Length: 279
Image (tube, rainbow, N blue to C red; front, side):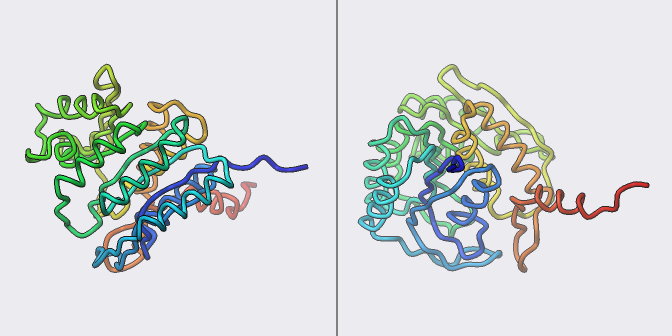
């Protein structure tokens, strides 16, 4: 008898040698949530825990071929789209996911872990016009929100958050999830927006870092929760709780930033199993 398969999540993103962000981080988060991850590499990177030194984009035809071959073979339950380096890559991915409108899509195209690059207005507009309307959820920081909603403005302030988020929803995105919104310096505050405005605001005690891969863990876990059949607000709540725990158990793998431990729960189980039974 064939064993039922785990939900499949297809991620588009950058290959990170450390495994803190991008494809490798996504696959770890998917596995932690009981999903099997399949991947399409959009770029290669050189870096370590102190940062990423360089990025090499993958040819858009290779992006398309990687995805098409997988999708013709496997029933995918959710998409996650991460690093996008060019208009051509955006166009290719947008065309692919448009063939599967019933599959939820988590769009998290920015990463503070990558080298500071000035994304030009044409790339931002391509994201807004081609991918944002297809996204079930767009995950952005407050700075990224402003860049996506109004490319000519500086970072959002508290008064503009609602306007920026609702503008992106008007572009066609079902939900906008804004991380690190203004608030108490000792807390991390995230806000989820839907068509009716702010749906939930979650505050977590800020943990000592610095970290690499926190946002990546959050977006990947949301995608996995959607693949498992959760409604989006519940998926966001579960992903926040998991990410917070992964950060609390973060590991210093090198000389740079701490990497979230997406398998902390497995180590806790092993430790409990090795403890002697009480007499």
